[in-house]
Image (cartoon, rainbow over all chains, first blue to last red; front, side):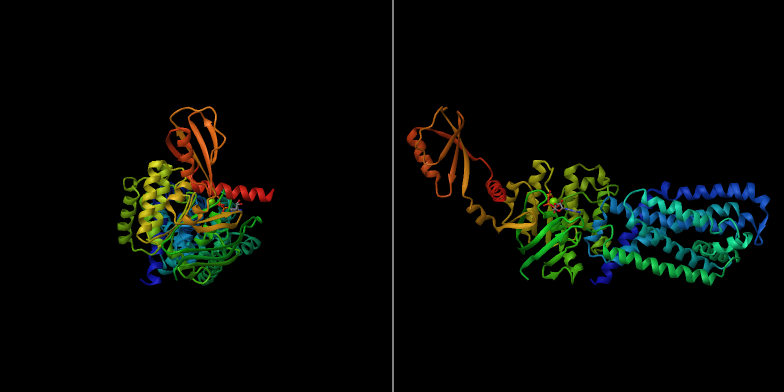
Length: 258
Length: 309
Ligand SMILES: Nc1ncnc2c1ncn2[C@@H]1O[C@H](COP(=O)(O)OP(=O)(O)OP(=O)(O)O)[C@@H](O)[C@H]1O
Ligand SMILES: [Mg+2]
């Protein structure tokens, strides 16, 4: 058997293990996002949304659909790799992978695919919920899929790096709470930045999540505050940087080898 | 290529400055049953950690079945099955999945992995527990789970770091039988243990490591032969109060029915029994006061402490 075949088997083993892990605890991994999205729709869509009126030519209820879906994808991709890899370190079963002839890029690829799988599953569930509240078609299906997959890869990588550095359970919730949540909420999930004063508009452009949400909104609704090409380049650039960092950390054995 | 492992001047200094290994040279022949012994903190697990890629060496050379650890790390990994000292599986995963996954990491196709998993779980008497979460197993079962996991890719070298710690005597016996069996079938075994009797009975070669250095490395036979002193306990038919002073070996009354006899290397049991016969003392039974390897081990450590003092 060639090395490639062995590596392919190892890769799918990690992926299956990761998918089984979050599927087994679906009450913690999938349900919360579905409930949260339903609440957003109930409050912003049905109760407050009526009073807000249109945004970028869409009813408010429709306008927030892309942002809510992508927010769920971002949160869950990140949460999956950070908690799964940190647990593997904490319970030390990451050693099962280290002693086996598995190259680092396969380990990283396997965990990231697991994160993407959860991101997309939750994304699909949330989409199902939104269909119940708002009827929205997809303007550019290919772009939509590309953006959601790339964004999911990016945040799975970020979660993985967080797990590498984490030393305690606190360390895996600091970044999501103090960095990720503010960036997504301020990334235009609930509003178009054209509503903001000039200064805040400029500042918002420094937030990478804004680009992703807008590109995704462009894919679904055909409206965006920024050019989708810029967003794609930015996401790919981030993936390359974070991917290299993650591989380098694994190579150095940071947090996992003495 | 007749060596399973070759270590040359292997050194490890941990980040906190602890010098765990101070330059170890060691060779283990293919097919050997090798005991790596030493007191707590000697550096056994560190050496094993380096062999299995869990610990980074500071300097020195490691070769496993002719493959250099620095140049061909994946080849080295393929040849080793590791049973670590501490539990390191996912406590929430079912037993069966732990083994199947490990097989997958070694590149064994899933369908084959099922078959191999079934085989090792049956061999280690865990088949009935295959669907149980690992955390629900008893301590002894967890040890066997780690042995099964290490075996699933059929490595030519098994490294077992205190596999029998905290395991009851019946299961320990079955583990011994099992290790002997796979060794007979050609697997090289490196075993660490604090039960010296276990090492004496199972292993053909031995290295004693103390404070990061190899202080003894020979065949078990040669080592036991070098024992300069052995102590025996004799059970007597009649009680005795005092001993005649002309005994050919050192004797001590432990209690009125038990004599302790200490034989130096050149002294024989024949002379002792000849003398006991002459005294009209009948011996009902006799046993070693300490297991022989234990005696050697303690002598070695005492000698070192005395030198240090
Ligand atoms: N991660 C670590 N960081 C710092 N020092 C360590 C680490 N692991 C082990 N040591 C130190 O290295 C030395 C050797 O430890 P090691 O675990 O190799 O001993 P051992 O022979 O396996 O002992 P035992 O029989 O108790 O298992 C000890 O002084 C130990 O404290
Ligand atoms: Mg140890």
